Length: 175
Image (cartoon, rainbow, N blue to C red; front, side, top):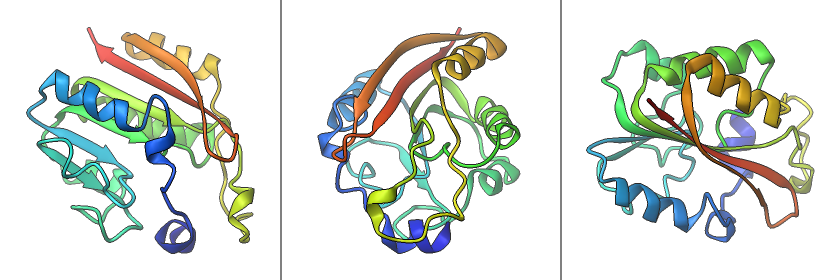
């Protein structure tokens, strides 16, 4: 994963995404959060666009903090008002995803916004990505999290990448 996300993968499509691109910046800024955590921020493209944003990423040196979600959680940083997971909670088994969702639940106070991949490998990258295990996100899983954590599902939408691949965009709020 490090060789792929540390140099091969590029996020040049972000501005093209209908829900998790530029419109998410406007939406978050309207919420006026005092703190925002961007989990898996990649090239940290939102850092100058959302006040109070801290980006974490284990593979990209552009992050404010060069660490994984698990490492960030271990440090026991205070929770943020809003957490963004725009493509970062996509890897591993059901158990891995459940563990990450449990951590994320403790890291946000008000809102959490996701863009997830329904298990579509980045075959367009022209590289050997067989070592990456893509989690197969689906509507049932999104609804299960809503029920399990008693979140308010604010929105659930589909969007398409520049390669024509489906992504789910959803937003939870704590009651």
